[in-house]
Image (cartoon, rainbow, N blue to C red):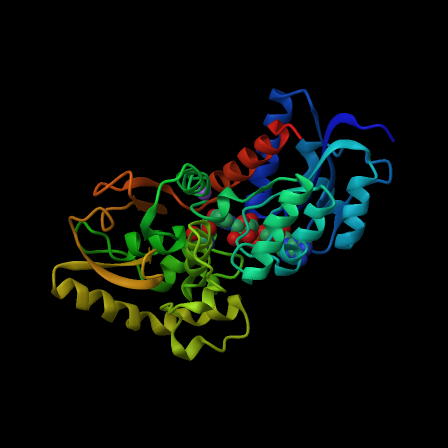
Length: 367
Ligand SMILES: NC(=O)C1=CN([C@@H]2O[C@H](COP(=O)(O)OP(=O)(O)OC[C@H]3O[C@@H](n4cnc5c(N)ncnc54)[C@H](OP(=O)(O)O)[C@@H]3O)[C@@H](O)[C@H]2O)C=CC1
Ligand SMILES: N[C@@H](CC=O)C(=O)O
Ligand code: NA
């Protein structure tokens, strides 16, 4: 079949980020009539919508159509066959899940010329071999791989760091607050201005309701989400970090809840352990300080740190608001004054923005 100036899109994952992405995609398709953007496949874990002739799925009603569908999702190799059989000019997979299985299949999609855009961290913080396979498959086939929202949601973190590295700057240190959930929790639970703040477990429930947490909030509270982000940033600056388990990470999961069978059981039992975090907060208050969950990468020593630290109430990190992240990039060019990026680091809309901007880059890329 002759290639047409059309971009065919398959979306997997229609949760908090997926729904916001669909709304942004609808606006994008209306703003940019050429090349034609066609959603030809959408799936959650149990359902899918697609047709053999790749007929466009209406963007405005895609979520409702998916909810009402009785079609089962295609397997991943079948999905790649389906996308490629349309003859479209470009095919793009949007992975809005946090599935490791889907992440593991990225090299196979890329090798076949299917570009990928995702907010997921799984592919880039899994094994170092997977990281290498992904970028070598992309380089070989010319298919694009964008994952801006895997660190700092829509904030321009991945693009900025890649620009620093690609233009020959030398990054010496990266430090800051890398989790929207952790930022929201400590900004609410231990605010810099005065005392107050709700119970720790109530703030955790709020962070989940606001769409800041990972699908399983334990992935935030055990520090793994931050460790994954630091793994990604460290790899971009050239450190061959094997996995997020390669360096120490402070978990905020009470020992008694480490064996909770599910995220729901964990959340239900968390109020029993509120006193533990109260004690940590009180200890910092005695010194006139507040606690915050931070991370850092020292490039020369290859040391990566993730955990709680005490901060003066007047410091920039203590004064963050809401789900704000802050990233300080220390480089040879920027000298003693780091390049700083700050803003919301979680939430459906800002995360979807990083996915939509990746899709725009794929569409604009002349292959
Ligand atoms: N929320 C945020 O602020 C941010 C999120 N991210 C990343 O964005 C991604 C999505 O997060 P979010 O939208 O909040 O998560 P949600 O839990 O709200 O949504 C996840 C979606 O993925 C689907 N899904 C999960 N596993 C599979 C699978 N194996 N096959 C098909 N579909 C699957 C779920 O389907 P079902 O409902 O059927 O299970 C659901 O539709 C994650 O990787 C997260 O790390 C990144 C930055 C910020
Ligand atoms: N759960 C994550 C979402 C964005 O990466 C966070 O809280 O930062
Ligand atoms: Na980002």
